[in-house]
Image 1 (tube, each protein chain N blue to C red):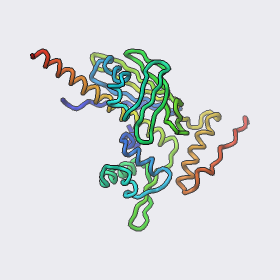
Image 2 (cartoon, one colour):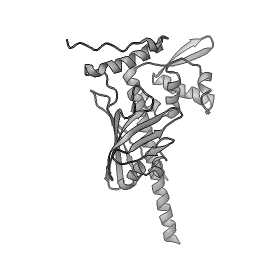
Image 3 (tube, rainbow over the protein chains, first blue to last red):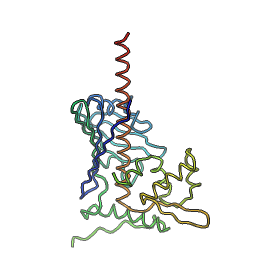
Image 4 (cartoon, rainbow over the protein chains, first blue to last red):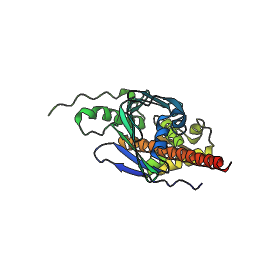
Length: 163
Length: 111
């Protein structure tokens, strides 16, 4: 069997941190969809182990390493085109469980299925002041750590005025 | 895909970055956390350095590695690397399964 023909399209949305990636798979959409919703198939490629209940409102929990567990809840499950779930890392302040949205979209043409992942709702660079504080806090903690300081002394910033 | 996403598509490299995020470490100290060989760790660190994800502070004969703090850039690159690896793995497993099914279909029709 010859190697797969990998074609990764990386489209960045300039004003946010939304991410979109695509790949073509030589299989019908029905089969690819099974690999998203059937645990026996899903855990061949997704993480090390976990528990998934792929129906709207069902739980999503996947271990990726000793310290990394992704947690969320299914939103849309539409055979054979769409699976989406909320997503975050257990124990993470930056991307807590259920804080962002992952959507897999499947589009089949002539036996080849294009799988597109979008990941939206990730922590935003200061665009709206309302969201700035969380991001600047994290960015500042990283900078303080890099300079050898104690990130724990970084205080949560005061709310900006409506000037 | 840029160098950052490529660098972060590899799980060991993401783990190395996590190890040196809050404190600097030498290659030996990093290698202790992995089963892969020290030369493999060195190679991973070279890739991370080329992608400008780590800084190096030499001290005597030792070199200390530290994650370069870059807020959003690092986060975006990490997420892209993570999902691009997932897509490659999904493709591989689906196509292997397709091949297996075709092979067993052929066997059945031959018997």
